[in-house]
Length: 332
Image (cartoon, one colour):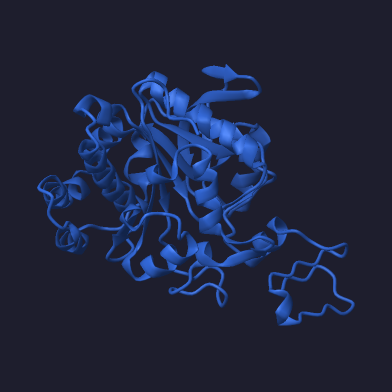
């Protein structure tokens, strides 16, 4: 478990909200896809798998999960080893920018309470990861995330990981990288990120893939905590101001929940990509060539999970008694 470069404490924040609509009827608002059990051996959820990946980078006590208040008991059941104080509730979903900002305030106060100086707090490295993605080749993913942390710590900038496309897809946003790398570590490269592009139509997706310079946006960001706070204050000022009473409550060692509820009545939903990342001029991107999907559809689920010799996928306990008869390409 890497503690970070000298003077850099590493923290992982896992975003585990979600409305439970994309994999209906298996996924529901009370059980969004990050809480679905997709493996019988061993039994695990996407959220638990995300926590296990994070534990390769930091100790468990430096992992935080942001989720909807209604999902807190289910999150605790999915990751019982995580301390309850490391589960940060939101009153309602407001996309990822408020998630990141709220987590930042909690993490900052937690570091202060552990005796970190303001300089050490600002230099802490914050890695933001989604809870509901399927990622293969975990060793390679860990190495690339480690590289992203090192780049952020050495340069003081923001780094994202982008997935090398397996083909043109209209299901994902894209990140265009620069033509020349800024750095290289073994077989991994760090490039300047030129721009984000929202989900394209099929023709544009084909053009993007053909250039060889566009990556799928995986929603993974690594940044110094102080830099993250500066950029939120600069580019998402209404959100940052709305959360000021939350920061004050945390600093004053008061229950922050009433201030969180009041703030979420004021703020609007906005992804962190649009609120902050698209406005960065020194953003870096590291390409990932590994199995990855956000499991946003049943077809993606079928593609990602282990199959039998006839391309069938079954996600069910043995006691369910599923029998496949002359079936091919089926997802149960």
